[in-house]
Length: 127
Image 1 (cartoon, rainbow, N blue to C red):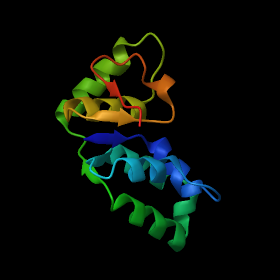
Image 2: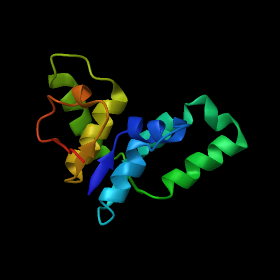
Image 3: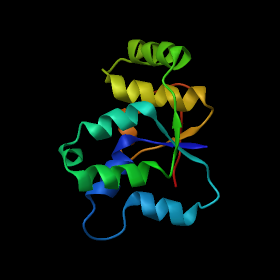
Image 4: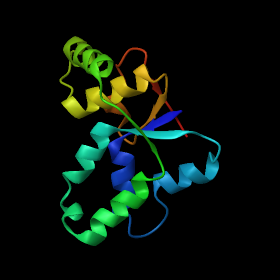
C-alpha cells in the first residue's frame, strides 16, 4: 500500500494543463493499493476551492479513489514521537501522515520529500 501526501492531491486538483503527478503514477502503477490519511481530508477541506459545489465535488470524486486510513491512538502516539524527536520542527499534519504510513506498513509518496526525510521507519516511495 502507498499513502499519498496531501500535496500530491492538491497538485492534481489545481492542475490546469498537463498530467498531474497523481495521474502519471496511477497509469504506471494500476495494481497498487492507494490510501490517504483522514488528516489529508481535513487539509484538503481547508482549501478555499471546496467552498464551491464544483470544487467539493471534484475533491470527493478524487478521494473516492483511495482507501481512507484512520487517525487513532496508535497513529497519534507515533506522530507525537516523530515530531518530538526531530531536530527540525514538523507540523501536525506531516507527522500524522508519516505516522499513518508507518503504522499501516505502507510507503509514502510525496512531492515534498524534504518534509519526511528524517522520519525513522518511513519508506519514501519513488514512483
